[in-house]
Length: 66
Image (cartoon, rainbow, N blue to C red; front, top):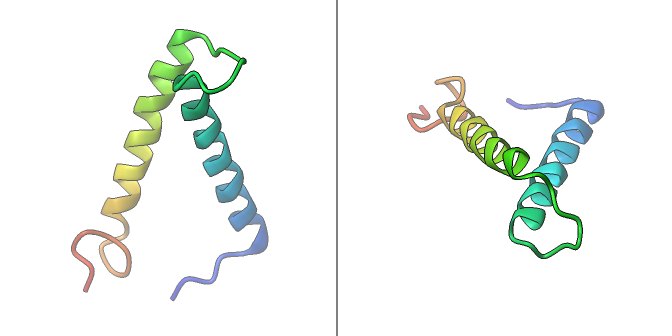
C-alpha cells in the first residue's frame, strides 16, 4: 500500500523535527527565542498540514478509510 522511498522518509522526519523545534522554542524551553510572528504562523501552518494529512487520499489513509 505505502512504500515510500528513503529520501521521502528523511524529508518527513526533518519536517517533524522542525515542528518539534518550533514548539520547543514556543514553550520557552530553549534559550533561543524565535520572533513572535514565526511561532504564530508556524503553529497555524503545522496545524493545517496535519489536518490535510488526516483528510488523506480518501482510499487508504484518512478519516473515512475503507
